[in-house]
Length: 210
Ligand code: GLN
Image (cartoon, rainbow, N blue to C red; front, side, top):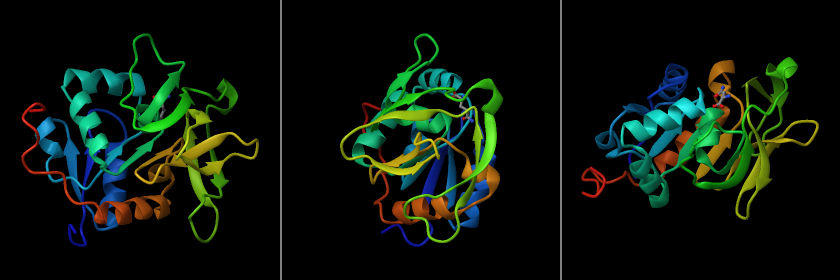
């Protein structure tokens, strides 16, 4: 279903939209930048980029996208969240700013800005479950970590000290790092393949949402 060029949205209110766009297009996806509810129509996948989750949350609410995005996730839309996107997908958040909300969708707890000042940002190589070949080159930029993993959520990657940095529940995949910045396409390719199998969201979204 959906042909060989799946339609993938990127939540484009804030953050590293361009880097995701470049990578998804090079993998053959058709990209839609999502800024309004109508942009969700026909999507087979959604990327929530890195950026600043507290700002992304405020803008998502301001643009009336919070409930529509929760609806789409409930429908089963495949979602890939990187860094701030991981935070947006977490059911539970520690160290958010006052009043900060998430969309939820993944039964995990995350701690925002979990790395100390010294190691706030760093590049490393990471073995990721399901990724063949050499370890992935990835960038951590003021990243969160996953502090609790609920039932039905698989751990895809941990650091040497066992802190969990990538998880997946077969629908929502969340990464604390940025392969779209370091240029390793393999996780995005896995996501594009998942989106290709997902029947597009309806062209006419439920009237309660629009
Ligand atoms: N520290 C950011 C936040 O709290 C995440 C950083 C990132 O996305 N690179 O949202």
